[in-house]
Length: 543
Image (tube, rainbow, N blue to C red; front, side, top):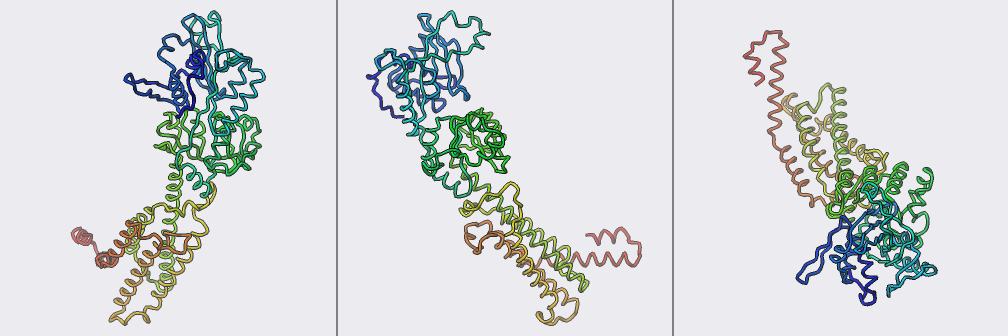
């Protein structure tokens, strides 16, 4: 963080009090290198930024810690948007320091310290400070105010049990500083938001920041298209949303794009309202307070670096790099898996419908079926196993991100799939029926009727399998005309098609089929003659 402030313009007294106000909390650690190195800060981003600013102003935290004792800590609260600490000084005085949302802390202040360290009544200057906060918020700066007040030691609870229940005084504060923290968007976030928007995914920002800060960040990230969109109910405060009735929340929730000054419960209420309206909701979060919303959402995405263990356990997916751009990958792969399942269902239904119809029609008309049980098992082997591998391994494409999202109640088999299934099945049935009933005019005359029957069935079987091989290409792109586009990029698909073709051309399966049929015929004749079959003959026939 670049600090554009000179320590010389701040009096030592103000700097000393500010140092108390920005003391690290329990989750933040400050490491200082002795040999002229820069201090290193670890912890929450907001605490890190404030501490870095304090270190560059020359504040000596080691000296401050040695001159004070922590009496009681009020951790940062998402509802109150601030945190406080009570410190006992070496002169037995007590200072209560508060740090949090600028406009909220400012509302509790009655005085302020000027740059010379003199106490001034905040009175008419409060409007000036509010204007400064709004100005920083409009520049997408997160505004944090630091304030304190003196307190009498004899009013502090003496025993530990009462001290734990003690509520720190939060009124009649003295304003020390208002800090603007820049939380820049990561590279690629704006593009990721645009991709999500084009894919029909509406991105909503729910934050605890000032509404003006949230608006500026949303404009910077592309969540809000322009200032004209920054009106209610597109942008709303969490408190106002919370006060709406349940039906009103359902109506307003669909229009909300930015929610500022929200609590974790507001985030949960928004998720519940959207889900009741039939929306499919995905939520990102990293804090323990986000756990209810992550659990309530259809898809919970937690942050792998900044995320707490509670948030990770409540989520469905963990984003390892804490980058919103990774959400685009989640959407892309999720749609790819769903589309691949649809492709395989369309392909498999076509195979089954065509095989069923050709066998039923042939059995009714001539009494013979062109596709016997072993051949159908072979078709299932190559179509179920190899076909599933070929279609299920299709990589995600940019075309998927231009589709509309799939609704919660939309059927798995779409109208486009029914159309393709009908056309493909009718085409295959016509081809196979022509081969079955017009075999004498299409094939050369054979020596015997049995041989002609075998040749005809072999032709039908090969034609059926070849139809399925080409049907795999059609199933790749159910909603596109050019089914061959990008086919060479999927080497696994091409390899499986080649293997299926080679296995089908190989005559070994048909030899095995004939052997099994002859064995079954011998076994049937033995039973039909009502002879007692010796165990030896029975075992030999099975072998």
